[in-house]
Amino acid sequence: MSKDSTKSSPGKIIQINEEQIKDHLGQMVRGTVEETLNAMLEQEAQQLICAERYERTEGRKDTRAGHYNRGLETRAGKVNLKIPKLRQLTFETAIIERYKRREASVEEALIEMYLAGVSVRRVEDITEALWGTKVSSGTVSNLNKKIYGTIEQWRNRPIKGSYAFIYVDGISLKRSWAGEVLNISVLVCIGVNAEGCREILGVAEGAREDKESWRAFLRYLKQRGLSGVELIISDKSLGLVEVVGEFYPKAQWQRCVVHFYRNVFTVTPKGRRKEVAAMLKAIHAQEDRSAARQKAADVVKKLEKMRLGKAAGIVRDGIEETLSYMNFPREFWRRIRTNNPLERIMREIRRRTRVVGNFPDGESALMLVAARLRHIASTKWSTKLYLNMKRMTEIDSEVA
Image 1 (cartoon, one colour):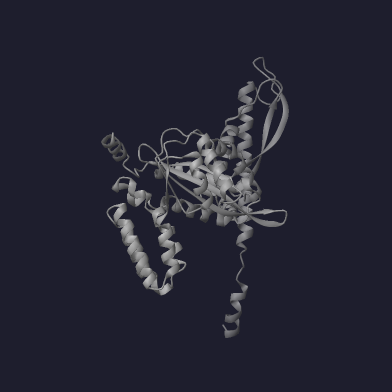
Image 2: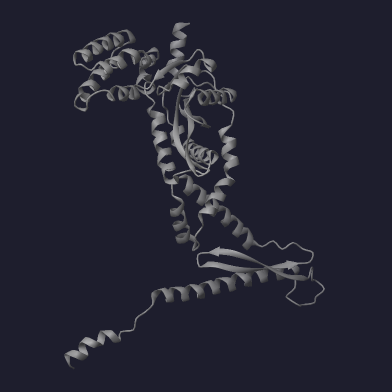
């Protein structure tokens, strides 16, 4: 055999179109599934009327009236079912019941995927891989609207019991309206109940994190029954601080220590921040409020000597707002002096909303945030002991 003939032989190899083969096999499988299911439907109809097609017997209970078509998604793809119609009896097939259960389970799976943080495009790909049919983004949106009522009911449920410590914060999102992209805020509150576990207490839309938005949010919590509040932990939102007394006059306000540090760092040279951070932490490491105040005064003097006058001013003016936690049991201090418990949740919400981008309206933004919070509330997060509230009872007994 010559070299030329050897070189030319690979060109004679038959090229197989794998896609055509897969498509052909898929059609064969779908055809078999469709034929089998329709035969089962026919058998069920015969058993129900006690007679075969066109059979005339004394025991016959009904006559046929044709059929109607119904699609069914299977692993092999979509098949067409011919559902028998009867003139008097109701034809209820086990196949259709299984179809309804499967349809419901598919809807639940789609919603859970979407609310768990899976993007709409990814949901489409997953459904195609699992069920052989790609579910459109419009279908996913319609399915999510089905649970809006359930979410709204959960969002407005009565708040029962006492919550000594509550954490509040807001998240800014984007919405498209009349060709413009506008900011909206979603306000969130979590609390520690009498058993020492955390709960999602409320979530509502606010135009902005301003005075009126916070007033409406606190009214929403109050009207639903939030009571027993002794300490409110948050960042320094002037609107919130101004209206807290209207609804919870006996509650103290704790400015988040971490946010306070960040505010100081904004006027501190980058090369001096570690040193300043150590000084600030020393304030909140003191044994009581009196010692913390004295330490703060020393820090202010030191910052002034370092020619960090603006940083010194922030510490001087704001340190008292960060020491409210010291009025409560020492065991609680680490967990009630910052807004970290809620900050972690807000980061999770931010991760989910970033996938969506711009919301079509405020309701969709609120519903997605509320749905995510509802999901978090159903996890172990809400059953873990966060604070030993027996210490509060013990202190109240000692004071009495």
